[in-house]
Amino acid sequence: MVTSFIVLLSTLIYSVLLEEVSWLPCELAEEQVETDLNGHLNTHYRYRNAMLQFGQPGDRAMNPDGITFFVTGSGKKLDMRRQVDLGVEALQCDIRRYSTGGIQVLWPGRGAQEQDIWFTCTLRHSGHFVLTTFLRHTPATPIDAQEDHAKSHVIGDKDSIVTTAAMLVLTRTPAVDVGLLREQVLHCQFAVDHKAPDLVLEWVRQHRGERTKLFHHSSRSGQNTGAGVSPAAVGKGDGSLLLPAVSLSSEGTYVCSVYVPPLYATHDVVLQIMESPQVSLSTGASLTLQEGEEQKVVCEAQGYYPLDVHIEWLKEQRGGSHLPEVLKNVLFSSHRHHRDGTYSLSAFFLLHPSPTDSGSTYTCRVSHRSLRVPARKSFTLTVTESANWGSVFLGVVGFGLAGFMIVFLVWMLRYLHTLKQEAKKSKPY
Image 1 (cartoon, rainbow, N blue to C red):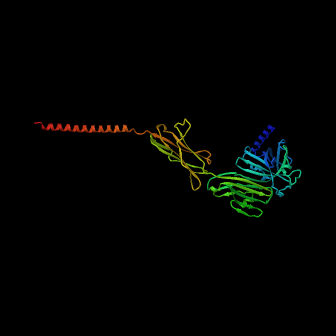
Image 2: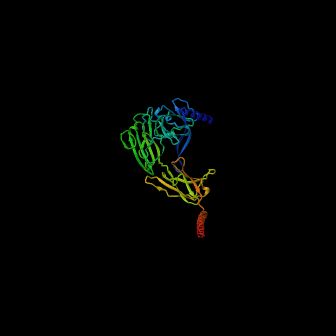
């Protein structure tokens, strides 16, 4: 059993390379409601492995020892395989029963029956997209509409359920990080298996307990309220919402809902504002100080959002033979809140250099959610020796004495020369 599954998985990966996915491994989640001794209802889920197999009616199950959901006759626009284009290894597939909530509406699609049973198949791909497809199954034995389908249609461990895709809803932006004042499109796409569906499309923003309706479209009334969605695009299956200039008030969870009775699907798009910090130093790329001199060095991270940021100073000795040392004597300013909603923070320390610090590199490292790797700014320190004032004083005194002696000698020579001239004049000849 395990060996056959590995072989099938290898076949699947190979088929992905050929862009011809024939089946997907899924998980079937069935809701089970039980009543405890106190009469309270308890709900839990039963999870079983299942396979989603694409093909035609009458095809044999690739894994006859497990549950197989056949998806047949869906057409290109409802073929979920066209959305699986990023690699199956990161794909999550979840199948669940879908209840119409007592709404007795015959689905307008071809071949639909009143006793049809509905399932949803949701594909998630590591934050790249979420795709929900409604699968319609017509049981061989008619089921009373008043009965509980979960109880009346039990799925065995080796059953094959033939289904047809009736509607799908897709978003390629399940999570969005966007900067301030930038334009952002929140993707929401849908497809239905029949023309001119009775469609209601709606966008709602939820944030901190508040719910704001942004757009509402009804194909029955032809009315559109709100903005951001093109009514012409909705007619082509594109209900994406345009945000022209994102601000802090734009943060929240945006819900795209598509309702074609009796089917109702929603997809959440989580939008977060993300601004990267701009890092600067109070000094240039190099700094020269004399031994014993003191200087304050400041690293500033500006214009970041959200609030959390981490700043640290590192020191690396010349030659880089040791790991950088994290400085401990660093002080921080308080977070400064700007008018545009962004923040700034400063980290500084007092530099008391010694000759052994000369050639060392000091680096400010800033970490923030918006950065894949920390931002860095560095400077190299050069330390010069301070002057010896005792030697300077002796040098000045010595130079002064030498000058005095030279002047005195010149004066003495002139004096002696004068005496000699006067002696010659006084002799009688």
